[in-house]
Length: 434
Length: 98
Image (cartoon, rainbow over all chains, first blue to last red):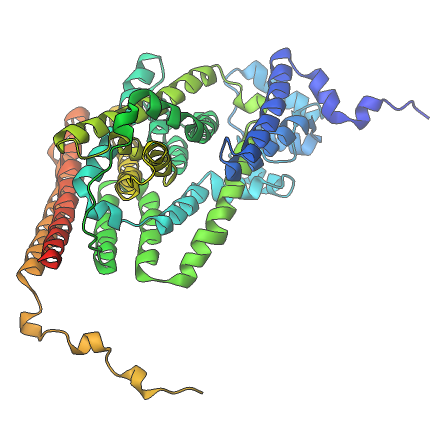
């Protein structure tokens, strides 16, 4: 009987030892990072709904690398885009045929050919979800439907000038990061995708990068969601840094409450959806998803609301987190551009927050010092987090000051303005980049 | 089975609704004007962006500029609608305080 090599039993360790030093360090680093995300999610520092599945996915995919059987490996190599260097391509094919290709049984995101995809769907358990729901933006649209059901556009319609002004100010990062990224060597499509991080809306970043820069959508989306998690922790400090306590505690004059009727909101949703789809057909799935949520809410279709805001939104969030985590496999994510993406992502979110607060200051001055400048940060569209952060910071200084309705108006308008910027980028960039 | 014939009758609020001729108060008429004007401006903007821009020129940058202009016009149309709603709300708030 041949002696048994223990390392053949524990292939995760064997593949780790056989990998190049960069990949080895990357895999170990990502396992630690994944565990840290789970911990920070549990502690509430980062968004737990996303970070816990994402972190665990990251741990599992980097630990669970094995040598793929020749058939699966061949399908992966032949189904993906051919390596530009013919020698490397031949070497990869030979490695696959010999059964020496490392890989996982989660999914193969780079495979494009239909035959290979059909084969892999019978092997990789997450491949069907990735192919049928993630890479075509369906999950992003499900999340957007959920957001639509949660949005009350009445907050925007009641204070249109303030909401739109603050939302536009808070798009500073989305606008300024684009030329900065171009100056750093990214092409127009990549720059627009990373600039969308400034919109602070995960589904929008996913949709833009899938449309404009598919080769970079993994690192861009991961960076976006990681940073969106960090805004909960970071923005309060930014508010305290940029707005003195005296202004933070400013009470805004109470407005007489007159409700926008549900008929008006529904009609606005229909007209808004039609106009935006006419203008930006490439982003039409996003607009439809957002406004179908709004229409369902305003029509009072409680059965649909229960489905969309419950199983659909949370199911989509679970799979979004899981797939983003599984996409963070060292050999996929380690790209020399990732470091720059990390810097540009945080810059985009920082600029958007600063832009929002500058907008808040302008509103404060123009209104005759009646509007609390803190609401500016709510223009960054992470509904309802940024509005809640703004209210929390104001309440810490003046407990009975209420800015939430105005902040929610700005925040909801921020979602719409981010969607419009997505539409502009998706439509205009391919024209300029020709 | 609970068959209450009253459920087939119009709701009390509907019974007290004004006659068809004077259903639109000046405030609602103004709001309707904003809706119509807004939708017209939206349609104009969409036509500039989607029909005029591709037909007018092959020069990509100029085409992108005209498209962007059309998009802004259409968004201004949405803004006009929102303005109408805002005015109706202001008027309703004023009426309530009077």
